Every structure is written in C-alpha cells, then in structure tokens.
Image (cartoon, rainbow, N blue to C red; front, side, top):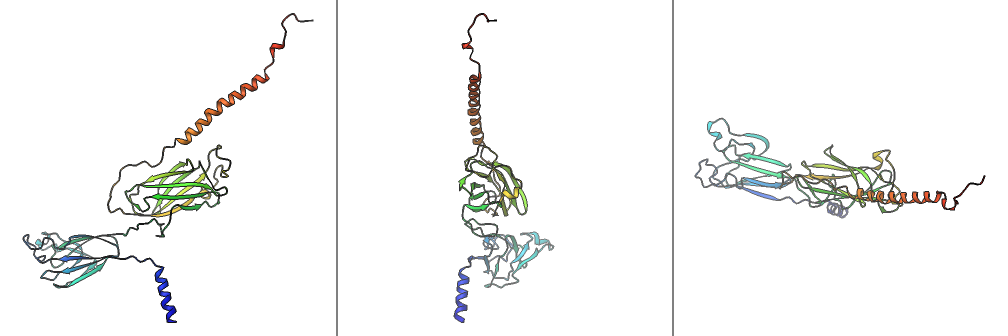
Length: 331
C-alpha cells in the first residue's frame, strides 16, 4: 500500500512542469544609517533597483551597525524627512519589521509590478523592486497550454480547414507579429487559392482589429503590433469563395448564410515587452494585386475570344451574294 502511494506521487509529480524560481540578495551596507553625503555607503540598499521574475525571492542582509526595516511604500526622499512631517507612507504590501545587524529578511514576490520600499527607522533609505511576469520561450494558447505550428481548426459546417501560425512564436507588446494562415478543402485535401474572409482580433474581451481579406495562392497574412498585454482571440470569419473562376475541385462556393458557420477561433497570450515601450508604423497586409491581375488577364483574353466567335458566327450566317448573277430580271 505504501509502495503504491509513493509510486503514485512520483508519477503524478513527473507530469507537472516545475518552474524554478531564483533567489536574489540585497545588501544594506555599513553607513546606510547616516544621511550625510560623506558616508562609507554609496547607496542605502545595494543594488538600489533590482529586477526579478514573479516567484523569485529577495533576501535583505543587514551589514550596517544599526537596526533597519524593509517596508513597501513611498519614502520621503533624502531630505524630505527633515521637516519632521514626512517619514514615508507604507502601503502594506510587505514589511520586514525591525531586524538587527547581522540578521536578514526574505520576501517572495507573487505579483508583478514595481514596488518602492524604504526604512521606517531611517526614511532616507529607499529602494525599488521591479517584478516582471515570466515569459515562456514557446508558443501557447490563452490557457498556457503549449501548442505546435501550424494550428488547425475546422469551420463548424466542416466545409473548411484553416491552419494558423505566427512569428515570433512568443507574442510581446510593441513587437510586430505576423499571422500566417491557409485555407483547405477537407473533402479534396486541396489548397483553396482564393477565399474571402474577415480577420478579427479580440483582446481582453474587446474587438481591437478587423480587416477584410482575400487570400492569394491558398493563403494570406496580417501583421499586427499589440500595445497591451493579455489574452487574445484570433478569429477568421465568414470564409467563402467570391469567384466563379475557382478550381473545379473546390467545393466551397457561394455566399455565407451565417458567419459563425464559416468561422474559426485561435487563442494566444500577449506579454509585456521588457525591452520596448513604443513601436513604429508597419504594413498590416500584403498588396492585393495578384487577384486583380489574374482576373484582368482573364477579361483581356475572354473579350477578344468572344468577339472572334461572334464574328465567325456572323460570317457563317451572312448570305452569299457572289452566287447572284447581275442582269435583267425575268418577268
């Protein structure tokens, strides 16, 4: 019984992906207790600003000769405390309490954000912790489930197969993302060369982008840059073939009675970019020229052909005047 219990724990734990958090150290150097400029301490907390990831732990070591605290909130600054009115405002997120020289205090950061802190005993001592969300190095859906490209979806009426991928595989704010997709006829397993559709992006429950599209050579793409983080839905909506010149093997023709009947949804997540806060303008979609040229060439070929056939038909029906002999008419 004990063997089965231990084996079950081992098998269960082996199926869970573990994220290994890091530990960081912030030192309170000797002389931090002194607000004067000519002290041995170059900074009050060393380093004064530290960047960590959600789940990481920071340990503060008191190497000074006096007791200190690590208290989240807004400190008064180096000279703000001198009027005996502003000694800082704790915000209640974390507080070490007093810890003596040679002691330490640790705190694990479970939420992302920027956290200012100070010492309530020596309020000129200030530091900042920047906690960022862990960004995976693989593509995944909105639930965090890892996915492999291309993603595949069928429309509810099972008449269309759509695959989608994006690059870079991890979506970050202020970074151009290219969504590439293709359309297939599942009955013939053939690529659909020309399909009309709407490309729509929803983020955090709001529609943030919509554009009409016409696929060329079986696929299409859209570029987009996100300014906010959060879960997204990429919807390709109302897919149908608008052209009578489509291949005979294609069985998906005509208008769409219900857009939901010919729509597919894909989900993903957008992360805050730690390296970029702005972005430049970009091209959203390819120039829709190939289809225009293709149909124009068809028209250029068809019109002379129809005219030629009409002339031949007219010539065939025209009476043969060469067989009529000139002269007097017999009464």
